[in-house]
Amino acid sequence: MALFDLKKQDKNQNMMNLIRMVHNRVENTDIEKHRQSQDRVGALFGVEKDVVVSPVEIDGMHAEWVRVNRAHMKKYVILYCHGGGYSTGSSVYARTLTTKLAYSTSMDVLCFDYRLAPENPYPAAMDDAMKAWNYLMILGYGARDVIVAGDSAGGNMALSLVHKLKAQERLLPRGLVLMSPWTDLTASGKTHTSRADIDPVLSAPYLEEMTQNYAAGQDLKDPFISPLFGEFEGFPPTYIQVGDNEVLLSDSTMLHKKMVKANVSVKMDTYKGMWHVFQMSPFKTAYEAMEKNAEFIYDICR
Image 1 (spheres, rainbow, N blue to C red):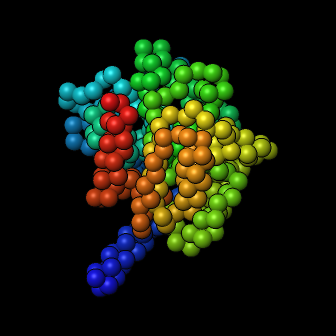
Image 2: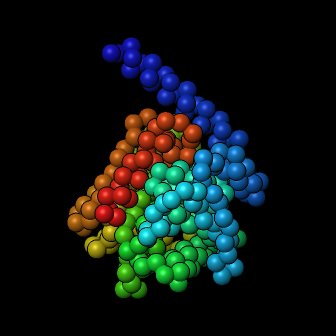
């Protein structure tokens, strides 16, 4: 048993080393080149059998529908918020997730290209998220027909959008699906320190740069910037996935604790040996995690 565990640990370490190497090749101090590298990754790996991508314009904002090319459920829709620290990322990069999500749920997924920092700091991205939400309402979806999902900064955006809808006394989505959400831009969680040496994707300098790009001069405890500090009473059912080797682990555990205290129907799965948004990777655990996302969505849509 001990030998098996050692082999599994070695395999996982090799995988994390590979992820670190790939991430370092994509990341670039030139932010525009960084964005282009991410798009190349998304175009290369964001492909699923029987999944079709169709572009759409939402009041001047580019977005895309990701749909399975077969009979599928059209009553419900997934609004997807991509990650990238609010400074990088796109609907193309997010195809590594949106195509899996569309395939596993057989639901239409709408992913939108919100304006990025530092060219467009807060609240530009949040305004664009609301634009995407309103677009779905104009199409005839009700709030309860929409599941809002997101990874990393997109998880932040999904939560912030619900805080904004709640503040405006509007109807809330049917549920939230969050993968490695970045919930606290003050970086107060313990794992920002305890996981710093093993996280193959994120680092303190990177997160600090993204925070400055997006919210320099802002109150970082504003719930529309760090949704962890908001009030969660009345929030819709929420499912959180996080890796236990990532610095943002605390961002998820603290969110889960606050939601439980607010009597939100919330579930969190912590994946041993996994890293930040591991669901992007083309391997078994990523697909299994996406199936778990689908199970949660089916459950709340019954």
